[in-house]
Length: 180
Image (cartoon, rainbow, N blue to C red):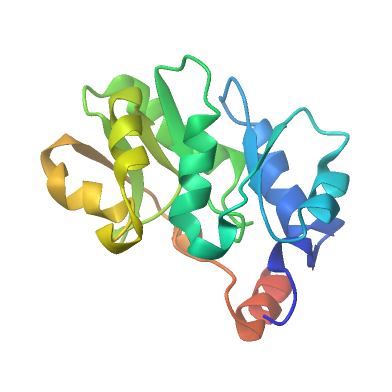
């Protein structure tokens, strides 16, 4: 992108503020935001929001290290969700749809599915925390759990591709602004 996408304008705020506000409106007991690159700027954007900020000093090593930093910061929790900062179209209602489905199933993982493609957020039972923490850069990341524990996944069929869409390139950002 050439600049931190989480700090790009999106409507009346930034992408990170939009994502965090959607999370804060959802059925989460706590929202943990993992920061790395340009951490101070992101913290400043979120300073008035009731979130816990966790610094990931290893952010250059990839998304897995951010997931691990967030999981390490968890208090006692029966479950946790992983979300990405570049998906501002994932609304509170979509998040709650996945959370509600997780609560109603006996599966240890719940995730949204649109046209048979996995999206975000992903809700995990606490029993998966240790396994995620044990993953390394060569492991293939959190996605490897989806193969290993396929029988423990509850797919929540959603009617929008918003759970799949992220902002990685300038074209994605322009399209997102037009659709906002």
